[in-house]
Image 1: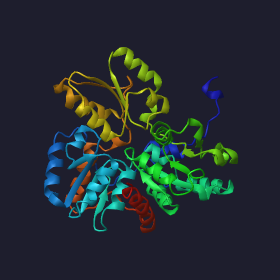
Image 2: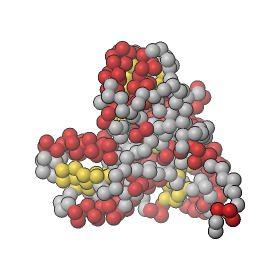
Image 3: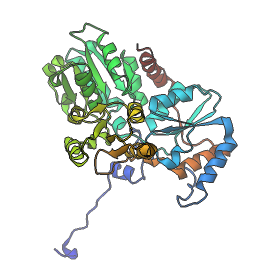
Image 4: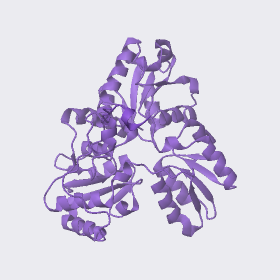
Length: 398
């Protein structure tokens, strides 16, 4: 077919395509794309010195938080490092800091805003640093799910448990409906608490938004069976489940996952065992159930760090979590004779975590040093109140 014979097509890019291209914002999503002002060039040789100078000028007015999955170029300027909840609590413990610069993703900055004082202002250097997992459960979808549970006659028996990796709206939903938040470190305690909120044989948990952490905790840590778990798909009518399936389930898992940890498969485990005899496979519980079942050790980010720190010299480890952290740990422990490799041969950074780069951090710090508040993350008071209620229930867990 020649060009002359081809009709002209009026092809309009979809909102998602525009969002990914950085040309449009999605108000229902964690992600945004606006970044006022001019960013420094990534090739600017003075970026490190500029970041250091701006931070020194701000002094105690600024407190920089760095998540473990951040780039090395950014993590070097963090006052503290850790997982999302640890960092939010660290920020709350520094009331003298007027500005909290969160080098992480959107839901983490929201949590920091919820837990810090009214006078503190939380800044996210790049508003496009969202979380695909958190985006998989919107407030509208979860409200519709609750309607489905109500129609099935079981809503009163359901206790929501939401992973820390969720938006403020989802945390607020959890608080409104008598539920709690959990981290990958205390998910078992959170589930045990939830099942104690009603009659044990009737109580159910709606676990949001990561199906894998919910399933792995229920089956691996609490002795449930895979048949006790069903997956609610928000893109299907009634979640793709019958009323009887919902009534028979103990764990109603939201169909969400981490784009990084979801990449690891059983083939990754088998291949690395064949390639590196005697290797210890250490994975995060956000991995698929078959990967967790085949691993030697399973635990949160902090667990992974401590396990490698305590490992004997000469031991070999394949780690299933984000590549920035794995590479940093491999370099840190190499002088001790520990061999640490990424579980899969395919490089896998968290793409949204990696949006916080040195130019964005420099721009944010210099803007604050000049008296210009940029990229503030602020949760409305009603949402904050209910989200904080859910977080406080987690803090009260035994």
